[in-house]
Length: 297
Image 1: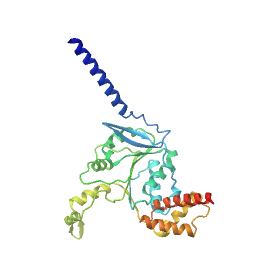
Image 2: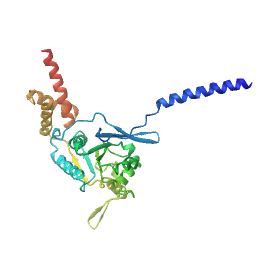
Image 3: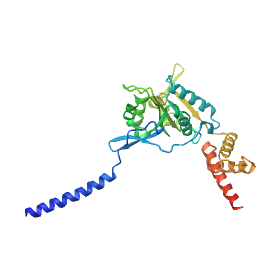
Image 4: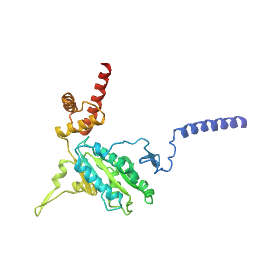
């Protein structure tokens, strides 16, 4: 009987060993210490109860000069960033407005412009904002300057992540590092959904409008960003100018001729948008299709 029991124990141990081996193969490999000299951009990745910075090996190579018809926003963000790089007072930035108008592209181009001056970018997903204290703590002693980048930021009601963001911006007992600037993009100015019924609590007191508590709570988050940059839909002339720029960058010899212009307008009508993103997508399609047709001639 003892030999049977021993045999069963050995078989069970071997089976458990095989199961553990399989589970270990599925677990993520621990991330190495960030190589700030080799890489310019990183993503925060969370694994189980811990997280780490994963290098972006092939970042976008957009240039500031490629971003057309947003000169006001570009100049304001560039100035704020140069203040940041110089160790001067600057503000956290909220870029909000219409989709496809260059908000995210402006951040990426900014990194490429100033990476050689020590600028680094860390992208953080909205769901990982609760990890902000862990993300910024190792950055205090670094000589680099860090853009903490949150793309397409918006929150639902009762989302705990936005309270973590508020504390990071201004409100926690822990001071944020001087070498960290937060840049967020959003389609919403106030980042939280707004409902008509919430405006019913607004009151006029001595001729001044005072919002209700729900609206004040939503406004308080976006107000913690010192620099607001708004992005609006492009006019037809702006859209065509952006198309012409990308056709030139893609080395299309005919440029924005009559045929390309008519097709560009038709493309925007089909997409229901005249944005920089739509202009870039049209230019790629046009140059690709025309080039293929030329090969067949």
